[in-house]
Image (cartoon, rainbow over all chains, first blue to last red; front, side):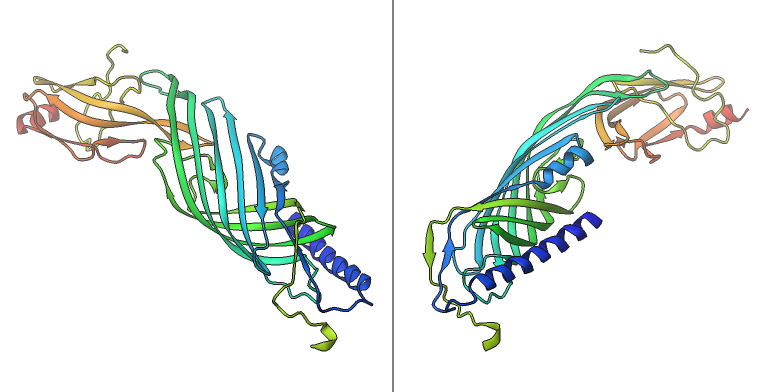
Length: 241
Length: 107
């Protein structure tokens, strides 16, 4: 939590700094009419690197694509792959599968100029995951009949559905390069038959035995600047308002 | 299969008994119910499956009692009150014995 607090503080500081620098750069230029750049923004979630330290038995790779379809409104698709391998004295567990989340982000920040892309945003996602899991080398201690060894639970393929509330901040560090973090609050809608064991972790959702979960992302992103457009929303200077 | 062994030496005053079931059979497990002069054998047909307790604790075996057969010298009826046998202490079988067997056991 302390890391989160420091990271969010740092990002907020970066947003303020970046806005201030850009304001200075454009101090002498006329504000309106202005244009905005848009294009597909491709991102990669670096938060999974923390798993190497905190949860080395699990690895997840997540990429995202969003696009400012309308001013301040970004349809977004996130997709990824997760693998789990747990080796314990009493069992061995493996799981792997894909996930996708699709939805919208809405920028909540008020800009003084149209060509500012830092964001504080909220959004909604629908998530789906298809994965398999199995357990082998199951050992159960039995005092009366003798220990049970080499048991297994055969592979089963599972599909899970959920919705997520998203919130986050994003800052344009350099032209078209962004970093930011976001939190997804997930609510499970349905999950297929998982056999006699709850999934260790549902790709893109979180712990398999929980109805709700949180996913934290820390992303680096690059926007491919393909188009300029005139934003509809009239943006005013602070001094004019 | 393990050699026979005595699970309960005397059931006088006992209202609950625990019968162990093996994890590696899908056939049946037999228990002999004997008073001083009466003997019955209970065959429990059960299907064991492994189930995850938690990722920290590992797995356990749960059994589904499919059916029962038993003699009727000492035993009147055995009712399956809960066919799912797990590691919790839920009651699974209710064994009713003839009054003569109770008297025999109480001797």
